[in-house]
Length: 330
Ligand code: PBG
Image (cartoon, rainbow, N blue to C red; front, side, top):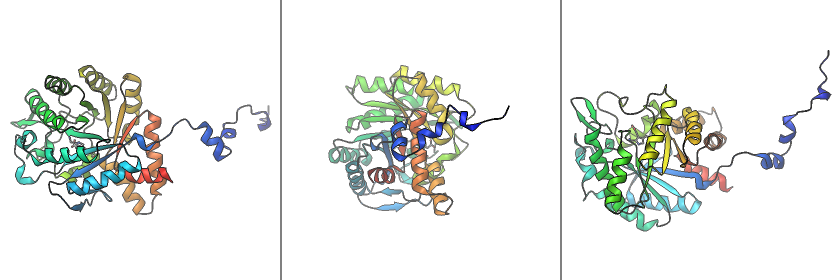
């Protein structure tokens, strides 16, 4: 029997014939309203320090950060994830400054709230930027303490909530932190402050540039006793389910690109929105490859961000946010 192409009943290419047809049948879209831009905030009023390993991103003096955020918001980016740069001499083994009610960072958050009343402001809850150990929890004899850390995280979250930010984002991976934070916020009357939980956060080599930006690399060991093992997928379902039960409003997967299977898994497993963090190392890979002429930056970024949406992400944290917003406009 000879094969006759004329008898092919199914020709998927028919739906790809023209731009209009491809637009009509596209299964996924990427909108500005899906994006959250992470920013590094200096304690100084003005300033812009470029970050060598995160080309195109800077540490911003807080007034300059507000100006950048206003531009981004006007462009259609609704959300901002904020990370404070803490001077080395303010760090100590118990991350005292994380719970200092008079810390200048809290004043900065209030200024941001005033300047951007309509934006979604998200703050990170973990001890690493404040800890001389560079770990997300309290440390004793080289071990990261779980239950002792919860109370500190909850106090930190409450101080952030009091500034009027929209959501706290625990990124520490201690067991029970969502419950501890939810209870503390509710008891203080902050029922409307949300919790975006870094539910499936893996111990990853893709956080390198972020740790350069904050000077927050662990001083000893690694984060494998609290962040997840990258060999595990099923366990992400457990982490997400626990966070939702404990009161998380949104769950996040991090990193992003090597973990699209986890995004798809969580999308099927939970009924809250799913976010993904396109982390610093992923951003650096595209920027550096584009600079070397290995790929077209715009096309690679749009493909990457759309792939997050296809996998099921409702929200994308990405350093490409500003570029993507501009490209989506044109
Ligand atoms: C802190 C935190 C990290 C990131 C976000 N929050 C670093 C880490 O866990 O070591 C990484 C983000 C990025 O790489 O862009 N807990």
